[in-house]
Image (tube, rainbow, N blue to C red):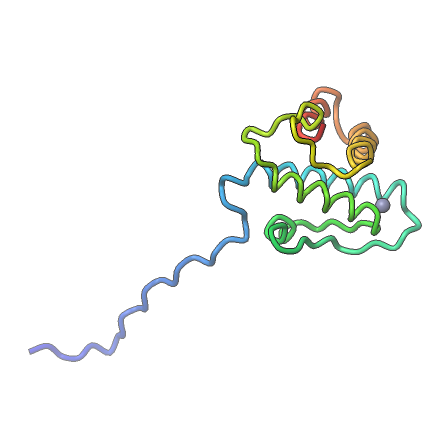
Length: 140
Ligand SMILES: [Zn+2]
């Protein structure tokens, strides 16, 4: 006859908390958005030092991409970043072509030029030439 054990069995391990990271299919988009956010931050701090900045948070499909980021930008730079991020996530091509070679360009007028300025400015501050070229190909 078994004696009741005073030790209660351990509860099963709870499932791991669901990650906020996007699915693996979107890993490249997440990397591109992280890069654009980083460069936007460098640019905005230097060029728009006097402007009020707010933490950028994406809505809807962009939310999981921005949840792990801590990017504070002025409203103009935030609009540019969110527009670029939305277009990147919604890009129907896989692999994504360089935007200047895209058969169906989707950027708003002037957007590419603004992003190019941000990447050039911040790239000069941050990175060696070879790495900058590698990054530029994702955005232009
Ligand atoms: Zn700015």
